[in-house]
Image 1 (tube, one colour):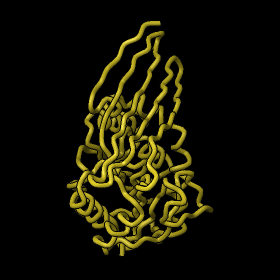
Image 2 (cartoon, rainbow, N blue to C red):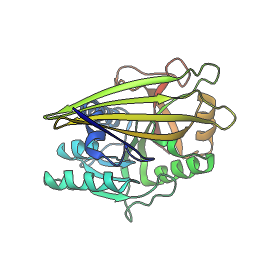
Image 3 (cartoon, rainbow, N blue to C red):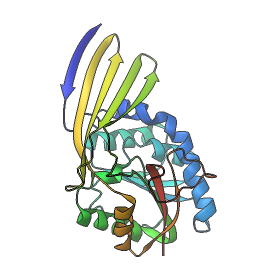
Image 4 (spheres, one colour):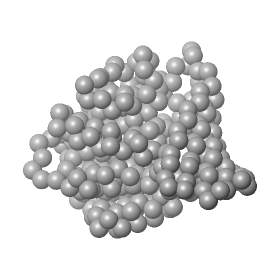
Length: 267
């Protein structure tokens, strides 16, 4: 078995197929969760659910929700992910709009108003300034109809206890195996950053190669999240869940459980 390696600041995202494989098992749970939260806390619908996904990645949730009859729009910064998402919708004859944009200053199609927006798996933490985070949330709120919901998933930081962390995911398709390892360094409270590293080991047609990505996340404690939300009064915190996507299990906005999904309603 031969081996090769590749390092890049965007390697993880420049390989949409493998990135998609890593998260594929989450898709059914996340899809049911989005639909369930809307039924429980969202506005009354008079037609298909209009769904907006900032940082849509490979488009796996765009596809899943579109198959179920919902109207889907989304954007991502990485051009490879955008192309992959467009192609997957087109290949299945599904409608949807996908474009390239940034979380801090994105624009939605003219007059578009959504019933729900969602941004999971800590993607929001790529925004590295408080001002950028405020701008992003305000734009997400503006894109929602009154009563519409924003679901924001992120990993909370306990500054008193931040040991290095490691998580592993394994994805498989016929002839392809992907092992993805992600490490996070202890948080720097002063700069509010944590160094992240992801290494994907891809085995395909008897050849193994490694793709590694390095980046920094902005950190958020429960207090810092509350302070951020206070600057966006158009969004009201309704309930918190965790990354198990269980509608029956709610969480408090505290450090009892680090992975939290904030369900926010536009006033």
